[in-house]
Image 1 (cartoon, rainbow, N blue to C red):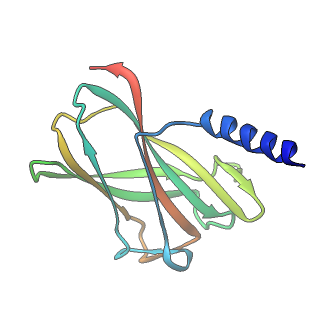
Image 2 (cartoon, helix red, strand yellow; image 1 turned 180 degrees about the vertical axis):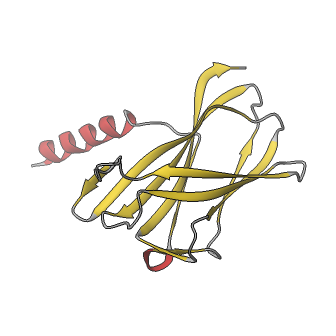
Length: 157
C-alpha cells in the first residue's frame, strides 16, 4: 500500500512538472455568472525583462448557454509611467454553426483565446491590464470567470 501511494505521488509530481510554466496567470470570478459594466477586472503584474517577448491569452469560463456568438471587451493597459491605453476586442465563443470554439464539459465551457503574440513591454515596472465587458447591455449572463495568462517566450526582440 505504501509503495502504491509513493508511486502515485511521484507520478503526480512528474505530470505536474510537464505542464505550462506561465510567467503570470490569474483568474477573476464573475459574481453570479453575470458580467456587468461596473465589474471591471484588474490584472497587475511586474515586468523586469524588457527584451523578452510574451504571448498573452485570455482564459474564459462560460456557460454553454451563453446567448451570443462573441463577447466584446474593452482592455486598458496602465503602463509604469502612468500612461493608459484602451482598445476594444471581440472574442468568438462559438463558430457560425453554433459549435464551441473552446472545450465544454457538462454545461461549462472554457476558451483560451490569444490576445497578442510577441507582446513587448518596453518599460520595466508594474503594469495593470483592466478588462471590461463592452456589450450593448449592462448585464451579460453566462460568464463565470475571466483570466489573463502571460507566457514568456524564448525569443528576444
